[in-house]
Length: 393
Image (cartoon, rainbow, N blue to C red; front, side, top):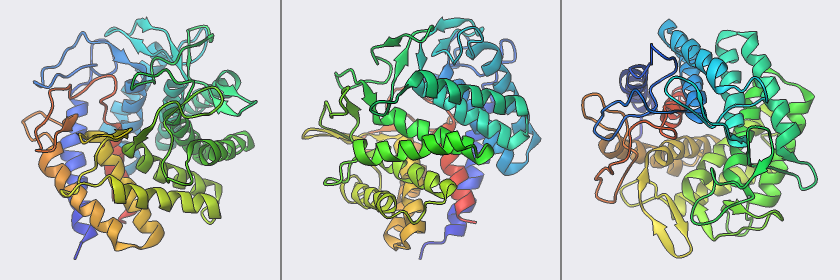
């Protein structure tokens, strides 16, 4: 018998007692924002660059923490992140958010990526949702307009990827992997969807609704393979897959993010989209879950990457619980319980001053990657905690 109350209690204690204290300890009181790097040895590098994506994710995490707990400490941390984002990461001259600034907040890489802008919309909308600060909402609206005006190929349609500071399109080096350069990515599209969904919660404007409906159509018609039940990952200019790659973590994350969009638009009963949500969850449950309850990373061709990456475990727990709420199938509840047990034992870094490891191998041995960095932020595992706390009632 699985007792969700016990799981919820554990998760809440872990979030407030382990995850949030780690990230709050990285506040840079000299230059603003939060320190950009903590090595595997738990040594902080106060001179490390600070990522635009990381800054937005820190803002989202502390704003959401304040919204859920009402704890004024997290509001102060959110304000601290907000100030750094506005004063240093936003390009007030040409618009948008930089890819990277240095430790003092000076521009280091002025590339503009739609993915980065989407996290600006996401975090600023959440900050407004938590605090009512209208200036944050206005910034979120401006980034939304920027994505729509500069980032949208209306003919296809598709959201473009990478630009220079002046909004000239560039090869998508920032969000391409596995030896390819993609014109369009599933990753950017699901995070624009996520951002616009949160914006629509606080600003239910028709233009945001139209964009969300467009995104749902793109994901269903272009990205989702209705035969295999997987999402494609990297695409060329004609929306054709350019690599045989399956990203198990992105798929299960997309499943519940799409469902959130359906909820805010009142489309929960949409037949094709509803089927997509549950079909993806069943598919990932069937093909990617290991005997120990954990989730593998990805498969390229015949090669399976069995690393258990921190964010993949976090998003899978939300995705499987969402599928349980959708279907009532106890299989998904069991998936969550076993995954949480695995994560507590192997992925959570139990060293004094630790957080979560980047990944562990099949034996549960951690890698040597950073504990905090441009991509390793409090967003995925904080959000997992928040989602399950709120969903488990």
